[in-house]
Each structure stands twice: as C-alpha cells, then as structure tokens.
Length: 153
Image (cartoon, rainbow, N blue to C red; front, side):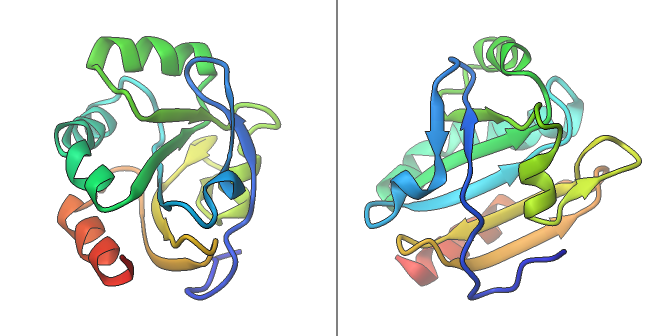
C-alpha cells in the first residue's frame, strides 16, 4: 500500500546500529525526518548513496532534519557497515518482524526480501510531505531531498 502525500507517516520503533531504540514520533515537533530505505548493507549503490549523505550531513542538520536509514539487515550488520564507512546517522534495522516497517511504507520488495529504494520526507508534525520510490537498481538523487526539505523548512 503506497502512502499518499499529506498522510500521517506510520510510526515505528527500530534499533539503530548501536542497539538503541529509535522511535519516529520522538522527532515530532522538533525535527523534520528523512527516511531513506536501502536494500542491502555493503552493496555498491547503497554505499554510494549513504556516503553522499554522510558527506553532506551538515547540510541536512543545518536544515533541522534527522536522517534515518532503514534496511532489513540486522543491527550488527548495520554497525559493521556504519563503522567501515564512517556513517554517524542512525541506521535502523527492520530485521524482525522482517520488513514490517518497509511494508508499512509500501516499499518492501517481496522477491528480494528487502526494501526498494524509497525516500520519505516527514515534517515536524509527522506528515509525509515528499517521497520518491524507485527499484533496487536505481540510485536516488540527493539534490531532490534538499529541494523537498527547503520547501517544508
């Protein structure tokens, strides 16, 4: 089920790469959130996309945005990936129940057992303001995230 722009973003609590619980609604009233679903830790396109976010993280933070990435990888895999690549943003594990949050956002790819490349910009009120949904082999454009954030900031 695809989420429509203007709908309330489904809430969730997932573990980050440090084993800490991160709840989407905890950012309400404080920060915009950019949810970035990635299919697989350590894969080429995912590494390139997340490294671009890492290299531009100050821009997102100065816009009052929190970056949350989500994959179906276990949080231990996310930790190894984050440590290797120097990712300091939260990398959340949708490992169990497998793909539950990815399914709630309509981006779970049953054939791959992982999310497609979905990005969702959620405003401080918890409302979905922008999204892009692409298949696993299609890299996303970071500049589009910036435009979306500028429009709601």
